[in-house]
Image 1: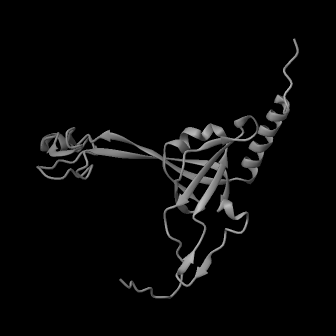
Image 2: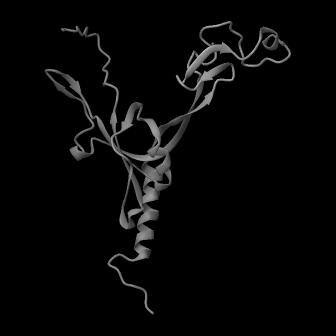
Image 3: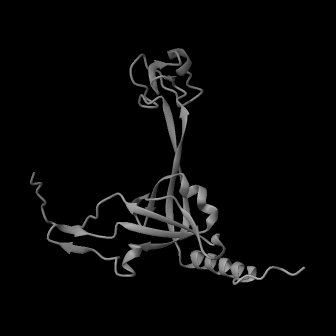
Length: 193
């Protein structure tokens, strides 16, 4: 029985995948990914599951916390806001990873979109960025809260998609900027409302 012939053979697909991963590795830039933070209950106060906040009551007594031989992170408070979680009832642990990506600002402009445009209404720049990276980073991008691309904070505009020959070569991510461009100048901008 012969192997089924297709227009693009498996050998060509694997060669394309290998070369595209080399391109991403050699020409890509580091992108900082803030994944969804891990939330854990505050060890210092009681958590109210109905309101999803702190109850404002400490778990410890002053004698338990004042043990100087055990410098823990617990702080006693009588009532009010917990000094550890600031009254939230939980502590968030930020998870940050770095990924190599090919970065294209304003992909629809076809090479003319990486510069500031000065208009009578003010300045504007590229607000959309396309990232291409290895498909193994799919879960990192799918569950991220924000991205830092070239020092600019961005958010995903749509879910990441797989592209390429065989549909598994590259992961393409489209994001938009969340901060306004700032230009260092002595100009005083007045708010006319």
